[in-house]
Length: 116
Length: 116
Image (cartoon, rainbow over all chains, first blue to last red; front, side, top):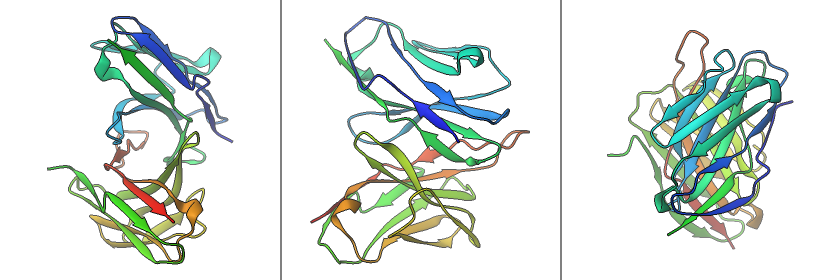
């Protein structure tokens, strides 16, 4: 079975602090994909990144970076120099070859509150 | 204009009523999905469709039905709404991409449904 665990329910930081959102996954698939989505207060879900299981190279996009570690089954997301606009719920998700790549399994989300 | 639109955006209905949520997309994607989001539970897949003639049940399909009227349209129906179907409903689309055939799902803005 596939499972995604986001143990941090809510994180509060002050603007300009760095913050890391944890994501731990479970899968028996050897080929799988990991995703992060952002849900701002307006409610829509915004795609941030997709990473496949064959590519452990970490990725940086502006203030966002992602650390994929197969050895610990983790795909953590770091926001550097956080801003108030980063306040949102962030979801980690997983899809795998055996359950069908189209079936996304979501974590329960981490709510990030960035105060001025 | 948004690539994935959902109507209505908000709906309040009474127990036992039939209600339809509609989703349209201009992304040209073949695959469409319906999810529901409940507080603390993340998103769960209700139904998905690979094309007009291919519709599949997801994790929580009981109490729901769907119709894929065209490549661009995918509707979700609650034949007899009940209070525990109160949730935020998302439509998503994806297209098969890449050598290993994974999908990145793009979400609509959501429909907030309240069943009294």
